[in-house]
Image (cartoon, rainbow, N blue to C red):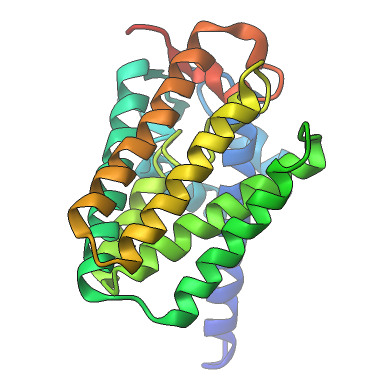
Length: 253
């Protein structure tokens, strides 16, 4: 093997592992791999059409994310979660985002980044101007919502904090849009999205006005909407078809 071919093969292996990780995560959250089910490595190799090495790397990463648990005799199983687990992950995300918002307000944010954040919120306003959100509009909402939260993370000008937020939102059910589908499928759906959007506007205003404590408090409160959606998703089975990952959560455990 030549010196130049070794790095290329390593890069290819890494790429396969990432693709396998994404596909396996998708399968778990889509309900294709049930909670508590042992992962049959050979079956996954055959299904995804990649070798064992990237599959094993993907399984290790999903264990680190918290979607899988290692078994005493070797191998992995799909984790299940208590409602408290999911609520704690959401609370942690709200705490870290609150700190990011406070630091952004205290340190100041460039006009260019603030303009990008306002563009995201303007796009959400345009969507919420519609009487109802169809699937396509809802997908756009999720995209703009996630973009705003990413921008908010960067406003802190702290690589350490941005790295921690990236880790937190990768926890199962902790991302800003993890339970947004619940808001799109209830009678008060649009009202909940409007409340969330108002909080987006308020935190951006607080950051611009250099009001750190206010910005932090708004983001802590913002995460409570997700906790409310969690409770509704777990207690109602009507969301299982569009959000089958909810089946991994044990109610009141």
